[in-house]
Amino acid sequence: MPQYNGKPAESFGFKLIKYEKRDLKATITFNRPKVHNAVNGAMLVELNTAFADAAWDDDVRVVILTGAGDKAFCTGADVKEQAEEFVGQPNQYWKWMGLFVECHERLRNIGKPTIARLNGMVVGGGNEFNLSCDLAIAADDVIIKQVGAARGSVAAAGATQFLPLVVGDRRAR
Image (cartoon, rainbow, N blue to C red):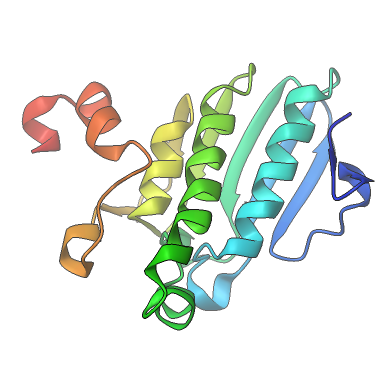
């Protein structure tokens, strides 16, 4: 069983995600609905822990990724955290970005089928989490966007590479 900070994953005490294992499924829920499930550094640590645990648990046959609330699956990086933590300290950003890329690599290589259960807004890094899953099931009102370029960011976790593979080159452009 993977350990983080010397503790087994099940004792980690998730606060920013919900992690439930039942009936051969692991359901991981972005759980910051007040900020449209935006991802901050602490959430990335929790996601990495949950993904590692689900990968190692032989009783888990499928992983479902979803968002709490009815407004958003995930809207990507928490821009408030980004402004507070990294403006004026750009050499610290690589740590956050390393966790973000690690999450996507871990999700893409989890060794089990992964399903993105999409609701509401699926934006930026949230869309990259969608693309990192094997299958997506979307509610009727889903809005999918890549907005990083408008905010001085790039889709560094694979959207530029994977979106054309999923929807075709012309639609991706």
